[in-house]
Image (cartoon, rainbow, N blue to C red; front, top):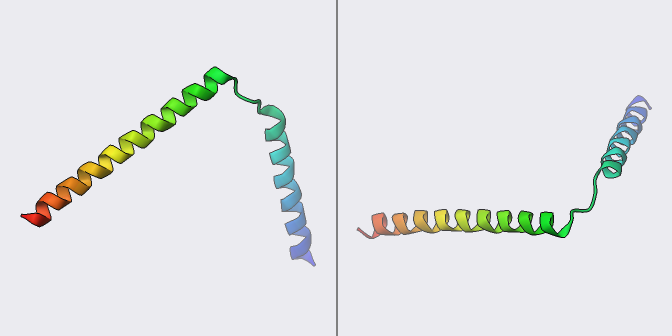
Length: 64
């Protein structure tokens, strides 16, 4: 019984925290949304370029 009461209390606490967060957030405007999109695409391109360079280096080393 004690475990069940503690679990319910923890779930209520988590739901209360989520509700507080959702009350404070707002929908981004179009400029903010576009800026975030550009940053994400830049990150994707950087990670992709790094992966390609690692793949190229491994290919060159293993090929001889």
